[in-house]
Amino acid sequence: MKKGVLFLIPVPLAENASAKSFTPYLIDTINAIDTYIVENEKTARKSLKEAGLKIPQSDLTIHDYGKHKRNDSMVPYFKELMTGKDVGLMSEAGCPGVADPGAEIVSEAHKRGIKVVPLVGPNSLLLALMSSGFNGQSFTFHGYLPIDKVERVKKIKELEQLAEKNKQTQMFIETPFRNNHLYEDIIKNTAAQTLLCVASNITGEDEYIRTQSVGQWRQEKIDLHKKPTIFLIYR
Image 1 (cartoon, rainbow, N blue to C red):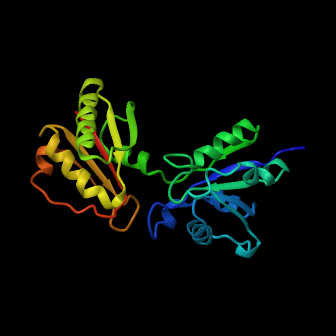
Image 2 (tube, one colour):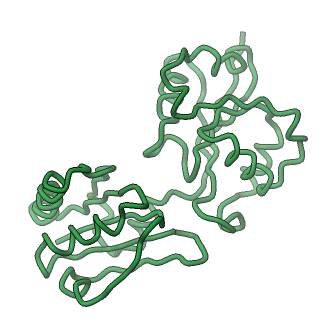
Image 3 (cartoon, one colour):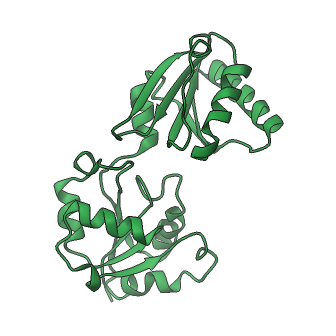
């Protein structure tokens, strides 16, 4: 039996960013399928509506792959795909599979011989890298830094050393409500000449992207509380 296709469908990164996020091909795709695997059902349904879904929402089959479901069997998520139906995979924001639990679904799809098709859409990591002015040929994304302050400071210093040694852009994030603490740790524990880019709420109405030296950042006060932010350092 022919298997279905798993389409990786990007979701807007910010409120009121739909026009910046959806391509005509994405809109055609969501109107050709009625089954989805999603990280957050509420967010997914909202995004589909904003993208121009014509299929009644009541006719959709949505498999919730939220944080409380990830230790369950993978079998239910692949029921339709294994019987020939195409399915969409959606993250809560941005591109599924990138810094996102949807990577587990994609990995399982490959194991089952299912074709995976990524759709073009917003990715905060690449958008931040593009706009930083840093090395875009050699970069590393480290995800979340340690919560413990001592370990976090130690990690920041390690990344600064890597940036200088390898001339490599170092990228990382924090839970939005802890952004200000991370920012303070960066500017207090790195050299004045180290470059820091802060890319906050990308594609949003209050988008803020700025690159300058840590010495210059020390002269300013910014508030990143609860704003999705990418931090990048370079030497």
